[in-house]
Image 1 (cartoon, rainbow, N blue to C red):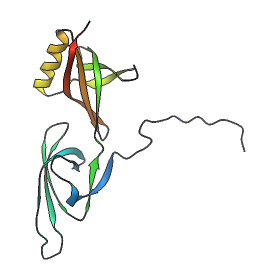
Image 2 (image 1 turned 90 degrees about the horizontal axis):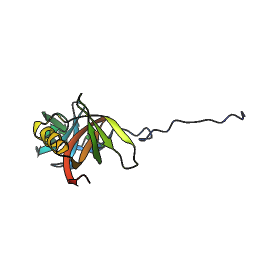
Image 3 (image 1 turned 180 degrees about the vertical axis):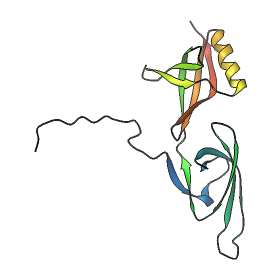
Image 4 (image 1 turned 60 degrees about the vertical axis):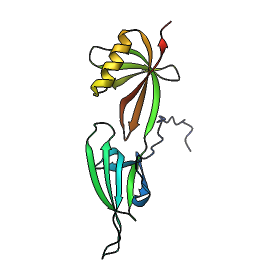
Length: 160
């Protein structure tokens, strides 16, 4: 045996999968599903009856959680679908750079500088206006399948 020590770089997700399997028949409206390799929120589910070849089918209509595109998929209800791990995290907004990136304060006091401003015009103007007025803003960041995006905004009062 060697006496040298081994140092391992620790990753936050410990190699966990970006998705987990769930039976198609158990996925409901407002749940999440992966369609065409995109994380989506289900807006409509309809189930057909079992046909001549034995499988009831689930018809999913879902909206991509990052770009808002509508996607559809039909899956036998007994088969498994991929469901994305979706996390929401709140960060305090510190700064907005000229190139459209935001500087956020994490819970442990570090800064997170790799996120762009959202593409949604309404949310974008709320963030810019609130920041210009000097308000303390907390943004909610949604992350799924290796992508992150600002999806909501809270005003926690003026800066002291």
